[in-house]
Image (cartoon, rainbow, N blue to C red; front, side, top):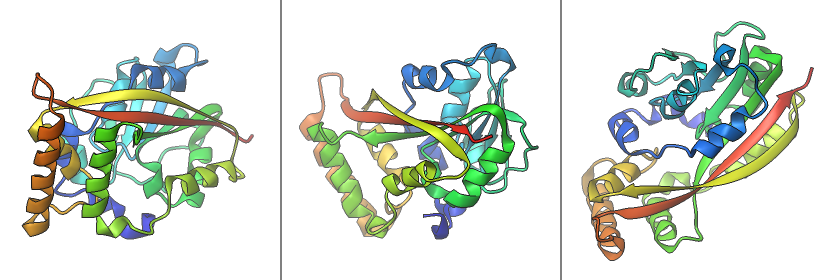
Length: 251
């Protein structure tokens, strides 16, 4: 996927991304930080930070965060945070000094990177005692509404057919000469959205159409799906499984 110009893929989607992309459960952040002492002294590089959703969650834990995001629109759409500094750089070339960070995180982003040079770069910038965390919020197909939503998005995103799977990116970590002791866990999460939020969530996806007849058709399908599942509060529930992969650098 890194060959598909991911730096500019989300241009024009930043507002929807900032407003409607899900957050991450507190337990996921707890898992990533488990075992770190004196967290107020930690420095994290959140790579592919987008609009800073996860960067701010880390910042809320009194961690200094360097949020690396190459897309200018995404950076400009980010809400500021006193513990977060946004920088324009890439996963493959972060511009950070050797052994300068305690934690590298990739929330919903690692699949956009060239895995071999990226993992080498992450190893370079991590302290020997550091940690890498790869996180994905996955639509839970065990929930019927969420499964139907995923189906609509996949049908509308013709370009994603045949792309490398997330599993292949995890394999890159497992086979990497730079990291060891990979462990995986997952945490459930729910996102409640009104009709506008549901459409905005889908429009924030990298491959769905943003104009023309195809977009109109997708919106109509989403509105129909919303009406079938909406509750008395006017919202629908999108169910996620937050997958977390933790690894330690090979010294």
